[in-house]
Length: 159
Image (cartoon, rainbow, N blue to C red; front, side, top):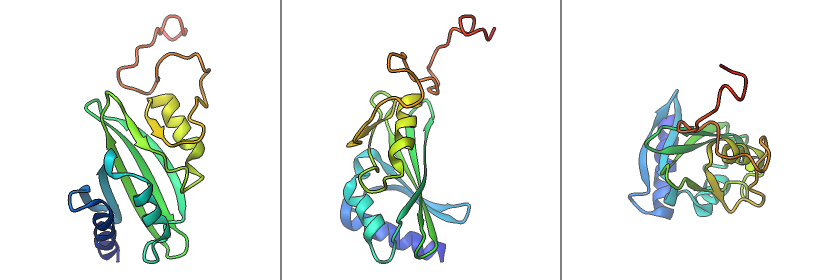
């Protein structure tokens, strides 16, 4: 079932974004996963995943971010409570200017998770209604989960 679902997902995304829209598609722990560049993750693709009768990914369970030094990723875990199916979407964005379209207009549960990623990794979620720090103070400099973040361990009492 998962391989068939992966083929359906690929076909539908390509119908909206074009043949080169997907960087990679595979099964990850037995569940479908697609990897997209940031320009191919937009509200049209999100609405397709959410609204299409064959997909119905109506529940966003998790958004997380990863810093790989050469690029950054926002990872969305989607669930269809209606069809009992799952999908992982990895969105690759450059480190120099990490920008990803916000999923919050489609899945409201993305709200705080995208804000946390913005706060700690510095990925900007374009179209988010309130992209602001959520864990750190507004005047905090930098993003502490980035691999290039420098801390003054002595000032923090960690040396």
